[in-house]
Image (cartoon, rainbow, N blue to C red):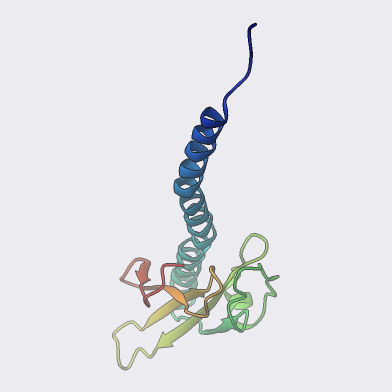
Length: 150
């Protein structure tokens, strides 16, 4: 008599292996999702910096822009409404955003030639702790770790 199939022990070993693989893969998968969503921030901060530099080359001044959207939306993306300084700069992102973007200017009286600070803040993981990126006329986009990676 020939029995075909798997024993209970063999099935339990397979389930244990799948469980171990899932325990390793799922956290890495979630982290990669957060990284992909956070990638919006430095790309948009770089874009705004480029727009500011172009505006300065044309009009010899920098433009301030109020936070847009007013606050980071967290996990869900928000529609971008072109207003104020961003409209003057002619900059807008492709599609919806998860972060909030601000431009503050520094007067030429305090800094020769003037300056600006572009800030992009986001709360991709929804823990209410913001991660942010900044850029200025002379400093490329940098990540400011506020004890929050996402």
